[in-house]
Length: 374
Ligand code: ASP
Image (cartoon, protein in one colour):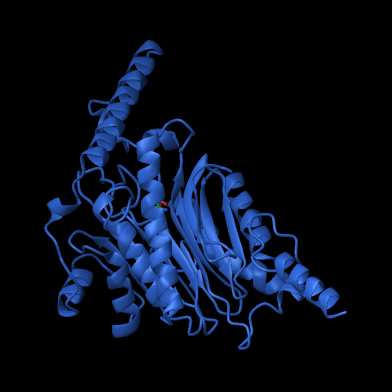
């Protein structure tokens, strides 16, 4: 009899936790999972979504990405195991990705149209709904740490540009020279987009000449990005933002996102990553979300907050909620992805781009790292 009961219990245990991708479990059954008697830790990160086709990365490059994602997810999870708060784990994991030139955040940030690196980040705590965000930074080595300082050590939620950097200095947060962010790969990506822009401009002038239309003396009077395809506007390495969501032993959720934005972004452009409710959201009653993708669409749809709302109002499992909202992004013409973690430790991953760098801690406590669709 005891054997039968233990087999039954083991079976139930195996079936219920961590329904990753395409989870079917209703909310009622997974509700048992996290309780003070059964604290569950959860950790998930992403390193951006975009055009990552199989075969475009060499095996060596692929191995480098996998190694860095594994290092980041393991460090964040270890922090949780050591009893640290979710927000701490998120900061630890994101700093590792920001320090790597592989990702479009911190050291590997993409270039703006005028050849600068301009960084944005945000962080949010699900227990208090406290949040911190920063945008338009040029000298802060780890924007996620400044976002956390805004949340915890200022009365504000969002700080931008020079003022945010003055605050960073006051808080003793590390500042670096602008050249720290310069990388050949991102520079080349910008040059490629500029070249494509020029070619498009030339083709347009020729078309106008052919149709006998009056050509303006200065063709650049028109915004150079008008009518450009996402590829032209964003460059080859379209995305690459980083983010993390953690669930700690006290059942608190935190989420954070950090980015250099999009290649060739124009003066003063701010994407979704530092917008609470668009690129980042966390609520202990629902879930934590970090997004990556074509930021304008994520802002317009309030993606992260919408996913949380689906969980809150419609009791949708996180995977379903993520898929549902990402469909809206696609319908509007945008692309990208999200990682989501709910208060029970369930994971949701959804993206409508070719691939998404991502990693999470599986039910066995081991890191799982993925790049392509499967
Ligand atoms: N979402 C970011 C932005 O629009 C870009 C990215 O995810 O890579 O700034």
